[in-house]
Length: 310
Length: 250
Image 1 (cartoon, chains in turn red, brown):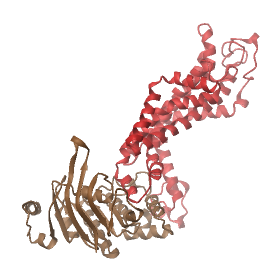
Image 2 (tube, chains in turn green, red; image 1 turned 120 degrees about the horizontal axis):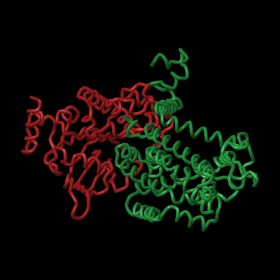
Image 3 (cartoon, helix red, strand yellow; image 1 turned 90 degrees about the vertical axis):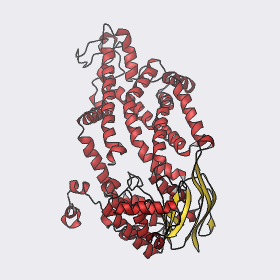
Image 4 (cartoon, chains in turn purple, red; image 1 turned 120 degrees about the vertical axis):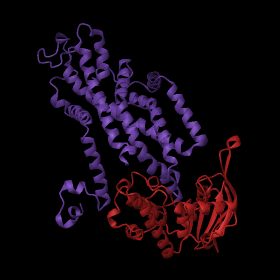
């Protein structure tokens, strides 16, 4: 490997990325990422998940180009047409709107909700869990009892209460879901912190005079984040369904907007005679949930420090 | 001058009924530049003394002084600059997600060192690692190489006193000798004071000039290495320890 990395032979990108002895901070980081990517790529199921997810995101981005109809245009003469009939790929719903076009625009809303929740909830959980785990004592007791109180409420009911207090709408639904979703992350982060806190590498940095904020953010967070990322990808399906549930109850995305959960609840009335109205958005939720689950499984193999450390 | 003075040190774990006294009424002095060994069986409290001195165990009483400064529960910045520690298990003492460079540069940053790049290169040379190791992760290093990185980290703030908690017991025999020689060289070069914990009398005899023997949390005897070599121990437990050590060699 030595002769490959020496500057005189001008290494290829691949050799540069697989160097045993990186020569700069930037290269060391790139090597780490590339090796993670190689491990991830060898996991077929995770790659399938990633491909589905990228496909859905591309669909959401290019929705205006891909859609065949206006997702809001109603045509009562064309209502409840079966899939493939009169140029409607997935049929039409009870107001004659094209389901295929609504699905594409709905992907924007659903992915937006999922990503916002996925950024807010684990962050709250990470901060609370690591502080509780590292500080211990009464801070731990207070923070964990608050977590217990949040965990004791049924999730949808708590989200309903928040939305009722904050007002209906997508942003408030996101906030409500995030506020109900953080306790499990706090629990995971605390459990991880408790095992990390007493390791010698934490003792070593304490001995160098590092303060608690530096230890938590620079030494404990990097080791907690991987298990949280995995948990988040596995929770994505639940987040979409909670958002759909709120939409279903009229407290999330508001009626004309093509959010997938709201589309299912509209189709509920026709499910026996016109199956496609509820089934098509249901399949979309299934696809994105499955993609996230497969991705989460693959990420666990790549990110788990207990396995990759050896 | 004494680098370290410990008087009537008690260390305990737990409270009330579950309280166990790990160290009882231990007193000893270590002169500046001396290399002092703490020996005993596992569970004798020798590592606990070291960890209490380092500030990793809050439940202690008695008095500890480092360079004539009395130690409280919270340690000062100056203490961290003066006293550093090398841990037993090099597989557990390096952060699994940080490169050697990251570990060392963070320590430099904490102690306000300028000119980080040249210092890191010098440190790595000092502990016998080339610059090729600078951007490696711990899992790319062998046990001996990891321990060298841990030693480099401990040396980064240019300490006066180095606490060594069985620094070689997790390593292969051939690597043990390398690390011991490295520690001996570094002591000579930097004029360091060592306090070393070990259950291996051979290792302590190689590196230390004076040893303290501990049993069940109490310090039973302090003797020079010359006396130890001549098997002139006073206390029966020390004699027992020396006998069993000799038998294991035979």
